[in-house]
Length: 442
Image (cartoon, rainbow, N blue to C red; front, side, top):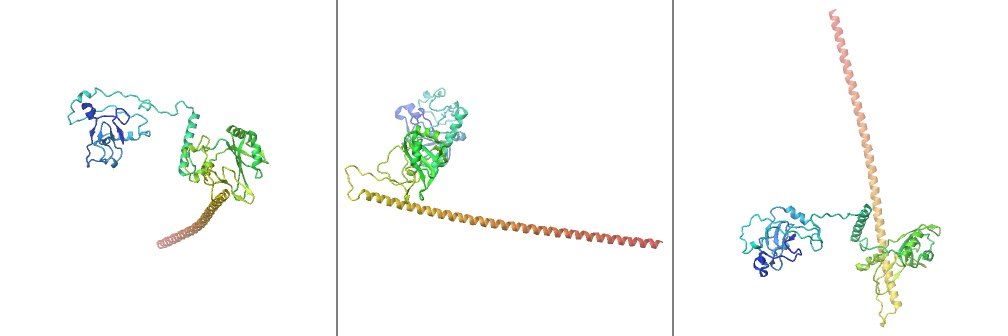
């Protein structure tokens, strides 16, 4: 709906005509509601009063069947002409309070016909002309152009558009569940290193990169089953300057006979793990570089899956299974019935059972994937077989059509031969008759 009629332009002001003529005690008048007059169509005009009191504010409905307004507001008219103007007002952009960003003003009011007598004392309150508009610096005026690109270069305009598109894509990814939050950003003090030699160790990599600054963690990601290196790693520095220096100096450097590639990390797996566990993602969990701002209370168990004597995965980024937070024991309170080792063993057993469940789910997904692949292969083979059959049918039809055309040509040739024979017979008969006539004359 479209609401107006407040001289104070706040949505809370306005007085009725009786307030002008009789004073503040008659500022409002009571509702006049009838059950047979309802908001059945767009263009219904009614007072925007509350608690049974009405002033000068009114609204115009912009859709049909606004039954939630029935028997709550006094309806006093309908839009007879100019409904297109009402719908155009309805399409304007508004803020969270429903006020348009661009001012929409009633420039002039003309009364075509008034069958009722004016209240006593109203004539002295009628102005000689329409009031002059008061400019509002917080809103756009009707004649004020809107150009977000004014004063910007083409490069700045392109950069602004790219940022808007990136934000829109991030919001879509958050809605479909691909990222935990649309405003999450990767940390700026972590490097991503790939194309490593499988024999490169974390200690060697940390030693090489430590000349640029203090390193908080260096994690080579490994296969959770075999423990073999996946040939990429994450290196977290204590400061962003050290991280930036390492990025410029170490890209395309030879380590263990392999030229590595270094780039800034785009991983947000710390918050992603929290998102997967179903914990609430709060806005204060993020900083400018994507790191959590609050430390969890209790002990966080980051345990790696082991096979044989291999310990694989890093501490914080990938191939890490983080259990739920276990509350710490406050000082001065001791555990009476369980030792720490028993609690740790219980947590490990629970974690193993959760890993087994995940492995079972992974096996089921693999079986379903194989089943789908076999089904697609069968469908492809059937499709190829049908295509070959269609090709054979087309060849058979082509041969049949060719034979039919050949027989038709032979029949036509045969018919032409018969015609020629008949023509020759007629010619011979005419010659014989001509000769017989010549003899009879002689």
